[in-house]
Image 1 (cartoon, one colour):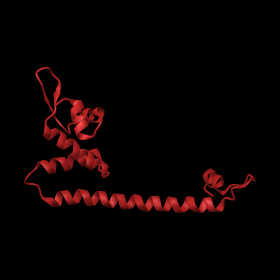
Image 2 (image 1 turned 45 degrees about the vertical axis):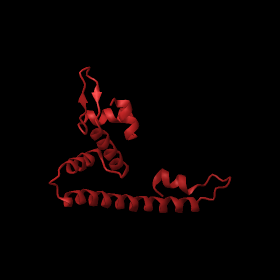
Image 3 (image 1 turned 90 degrees about the vertical axis):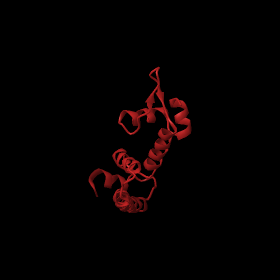
Image 4 (image 1 turned 180 degrees about the vertical axis):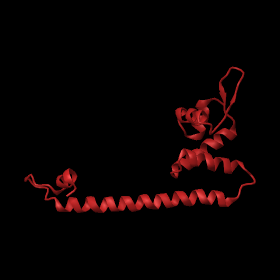
Length: 129
């Protein structure tokens, strides 16, 4: 199938598919005319990559996961390690965002939001309080 059909079936834009090919995540066959010829297995890999990226895995992590998926002698512990590392990273980001929210919420509550020029939000932004 051509890239348009692969795009439709995978739900990924053609540009993303070409990028994944450029970085070696997928390797579609080339027809006699030189055009890419995507197989059902390529579309399956593209969907795999789309779901992996949707879960926050980096391109390099997706490369590792795809290699493990294709390795029938893989140890599930290797897959779990990658996922656990990502989960730890997500938890860290959640803590950071929670602290940012707390700080911003405090500043919003400290600002009177009236016609006066005094604003704790701007004071915090200008010199750190």
